[in-house]
Length: 302
Image (cartoon, rainbow, N blue to C red; front, side, top):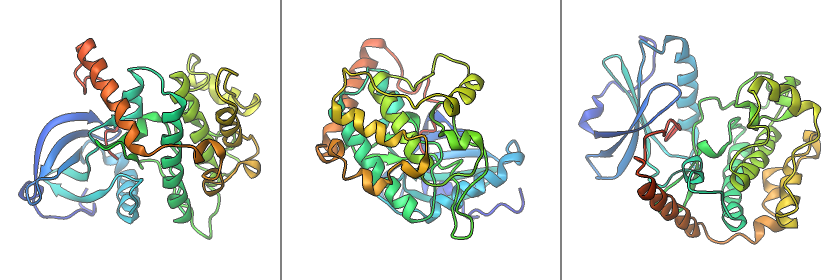
């Protein structure tokens, strides 16, 4: 713990911690605000004594977050050590995750096109910076109150460098995982494009393909079977977009930059329209009496 890099200043001089809004892979996430600006923030608090084994992962996450600067990625405000706790302060996204919003029902194609366009912009930025996300799924896509889409949770992000263009490490969530990642045959930024295609199916149908099966079985099926497709009830443009993402051979998968030119994406409306999904979810919560955070074990932010 002693070698952990974090600002030594007391975070409570700058931030007020309020209610818990989620549980992350390494700790709890709270809503709070910046005393200096009154702006809301998300505060991830990690007990370093309980996270000895994960220190390297946490440092990697902070290192990646601190290098990113894009409107399509949750903003990192800083990290602080207080006692045995590490505070990671992030942008707060009040709209919740797409996994939360899915509880109120699947997304119409118009909304999926907007989400996909914003994610592709985020991925174009990340991939240009030589970084991979490696865990794209609805739970890691956040919305703020204006409907802006943000990629979150870089806990397993890999950094691709010029000298090492392929990763051989096995991370991510099986249902969204590209065949080459499962095979551990080396992979690059195209693995994120596969996960994006699976996420499109998740938003359209409510769950990723094979979700009814045990994850270990899925690890066997994804590399063996033909790529998943959408049923013909969906538009040709949408099915074609998903097909472009879910090419088994990564070399045949388009890049984020190319996919931004796809007809399905070009027809997407402004992101402000996504506030309709936030309103729908709020109505759903009211009707179901569900506390918005009761099962938000989504990483909330980062």
